[in-house]
Image (cartoon, rainbow, N blue to C red; front, top):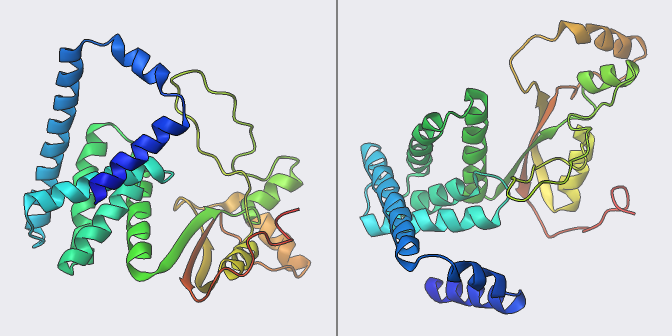
Length: 266
């Protein structure tokens, strides 16, 4: 059934969009080289699946190879549809964890598998840690019916200091220039929120807020923002929820209340 759905999806895409450029490009390729490239790609994925199976076995999550292979390709397919780099890893974790009743071990096996991949690829330690946190959050969200959200805080001490010093308060104030052909598009926050706006977002989306806090993106002291804290205290303004990042957890409690709340959309 899944294979049929996949074929149907490809057929719809080919019907909806002009497929002639694709076929024109493929017609210039050598059939033997193209087949060899596809074969090497599939072999690489098969070996990665086998390594994941071995790592999961060390954590007492045992299953047949074809099961791991199926989940591996589910994860690859998910990465094509979900923004970011961790959606497929989260999907693999949830499928494997639910199948064997070992969610924590399943998440750990996926983390161990791509930890080696990303270190070999030279990914910075901070980016690696961020991806691990994101994958674990998405896995637990999918498994337990919760929404885990992290986003920059436009009401932070840093943002207030930037405004008063004459600078833009956002983490991402620059426009994104057009990308040249073959260049990766850059993901960017189009809008940054305050912590209390996140409370409203959860409410209108039908979620009950179970955790809301802010904190630093890096564990570094910020003595340069002490004057902002003094200013807030002097004028009796709220000092809570002023960290650089917002960290929120919500539990689905009902249907969508309003798709386009007036305070956010015009």
